[in-house]
Image (tube, rainbow, N blue to C red; front, side):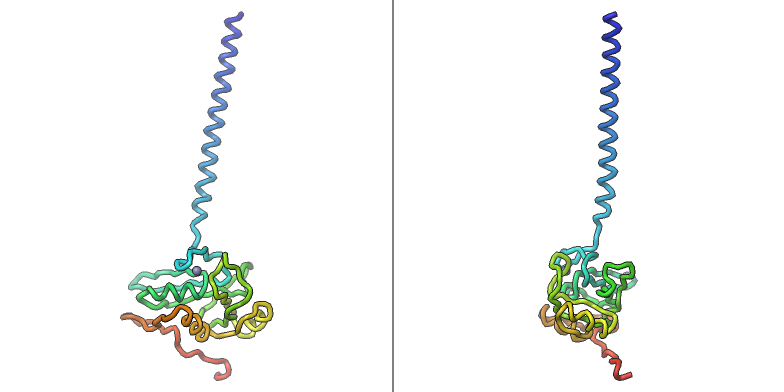
Length: 195
Ligand SMILES: [Zn+2]
């Protein structure tokens, strides 16, 4: 009888050990499973100048540079950081996209052609965790930029003037391409009144 009891006890103990082992394994598997996607999701675009994440920046900029058959994308949290970055690039960007501040963080978030956008330059409102100074926000039209200026402070400028101000800050940036020629960034802007 005692022997049977001991056997049952041993059996139960074995069953418990087995259950505990399985639970540990399941836990470890769950942890691994959970951890990996989290790590994978952490591949976020980073500003190469200041190392801030760019995907949450209201002044995010993306520039595309053609190098032979390859297209290189530069990610920047701000125009300031982009101009800094471009100082080290051999070629000028073919396209520069800026975030439309009016649609930022909405379902309709739209990139704008930087050369055609209007800017509120040196805004008083900004988040230094998301973007580098000066805070410069882009808008689809001059009118929209002026609407937002009331709240943002700063100055309404077109691309050329914005670029000139930023270039002053980043000391000197030669917009002349080296070798390969692309549309210059400072091409004359067609003003609405001229049309
Ligand atoms: Zn930056």
